[in-house]
Image 1 (tube, one colour):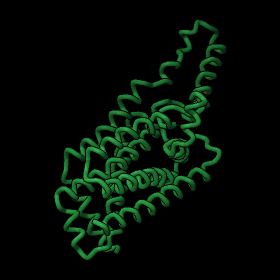
Image 2 (tube, rainbow, N blue to C red):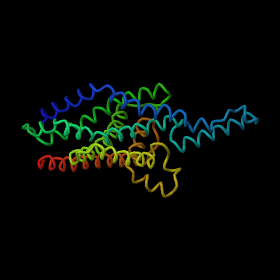
Image 3 (cartoon, rainbow, N blue to C red):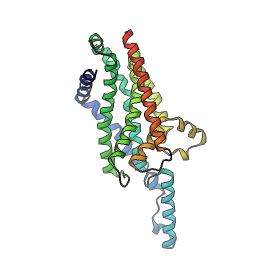
Image 4 (tube, rainbow, N blue to C red):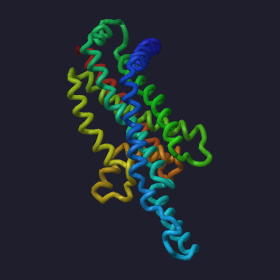
Amino acid sequence: MLDEVLVLLTREIKKWIGRKPVLLVSLVTPLFWILLFGKSFNITSIVEIDIPSLNLPVGVAQSIVEAIRERIYQIFGTRDYFTYIASGMLVVFALFQGMFSGVSVVFDKRLGYMTRLMASPIRRESIFVAKVLATVFRITVLATVLLMVAFIAGFKFKEGLTVFDAIGAWIVLIAIAVALSSIFMMLGFITDSHELLFSIGNLVNLPLMFTSSALFPTSQMPEWLRVIAHLNPLTYGADLVRFFLVGKPLDNALLYFTAVVLVSTLTFIACMLLSVRVLERS
């Protein structure tokens, strides 16, 4: 099975690298969010106050400015909003990549490639696993590029960042992507309509993004929206990425990390079994 997965995975990677427009769009879209939205809608720059403009004694003015900065840190867990939103957009990026990965299954079916695979003496599980691993590969490459660009633009990593922190953040991103890509892969095996997958993705991705802590802390949300945010897996993913990369305090980091990985694993297994059942019937 390992040989089968490696062959199919290599094919998926070559196909992705060979499609330059798809590669460019995959990278440019999250860059727009991080650079344009993150830099233009910078809450910390709005409330930042120059000491001379206060027309107060220097000691009093400094106290006011420091109090405002401390309040910003208490709300966002970072000293600037760009770092907050950039780390949250990494999770949203994994969300987008995971959701639209199932479209490749539909196109493989339409182009006849899936028919040839089904006629080959390979395990049906290998097809599903290779597709999911291809999504993991894409996210690893693109998330690394995004972090580099964000760092150049002013992203601030926490002091004392270790390789274990980077691995922890990567595992969280992969867990989110694996869960969502597994669901949409399964839908891709069930349906022959890429329009349906795009419709479902567009219907779900924005509500998931705006009802999570990716763009704004849940502590500042209305009570009804806070309840929804606490049920949203992106909230835990974004908070964990900030915990590992930025150092945002998180009381139940180990519990959240375990829950995200466990839910992702169970989702992957369930969707793989369902997909195999669909493939065997086709």
